[in-house]
Image (cartoon, rainbow, N blue to C red; front, side, top):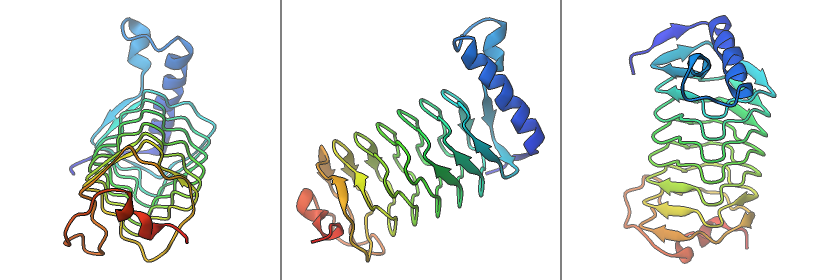
Length: 206
């Protein structure tokens, strides 16, 4: 990923303009539409943000490694192919966000709302998803090996070719995915794929 460097002061200015865009009703045309946060191919200095509305922001192929977001709303945001390694999202909202092919290794999403998020091809290895609602999310080719899944809700989620190996067992608040097909449950994801809820039962506490 070839990215330009963006200092936090510049990013905060762009975020402030985005708040004004949302307050104006999120117009798609006109002068106010130019205030929408649209950022591509940028490496952003680690941020510490709290209680911000970032709905419908476009943050594509950007690097936000080691940033921290507390009670921020990313609903409907386009975050695909971005890097969130070791980033922290505490009690954030991502409803209907698109995180396709994002890299979230060692990231924390604890207590966040991840309903109807597209995680296709997303790398969530070792991510902390404690107390997250992932209902109706798309987990197609998603790598969840060694992720912390304590009290996660997977009702309605689609798991296809999902990598799910873990040495731990977890309690789930919802465990009724709508699709479970060709999931890989071995450490190196090289074994034969499995299908059906029985393929996931090894993750649950007895």
